[in-house]
View 1: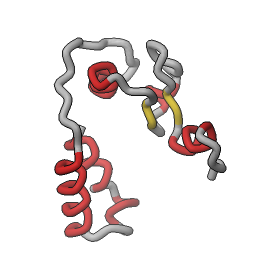
View 2: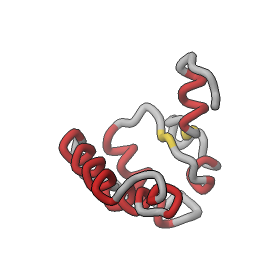
View 3: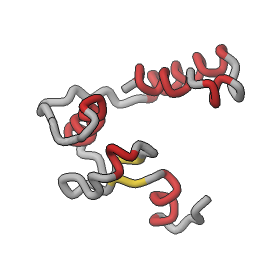
Amino acid sequence: MLREIAGVLARPKFARALTEERRRETLELLAAAALWIEPREAVRECRDPKDNCTLELALAAGASAILTGDEDLLVLHPWRGIPVLRPAEFLWALGGRPS
């Protein structure tokens, strides 16, 4: 998952907003603060096989929600009883305002 986040932060839209050093610092902070979970069950339920690792991790971690902008995951909402939401929808559900 950390490699996935690193890949996302390297995308042009983030590269324009964050220096390489800031992206590296962000990844280091995330790695240090992360709860490292090893998935125990293989999942093959997403139409994009690359995204099955997200489902495996959510299952192993006992996630209360999956936050994503990925349509291949969003179409699964809810997945095994776990809400799959855009971040703004999640905040709205918590009483915030959608952006």
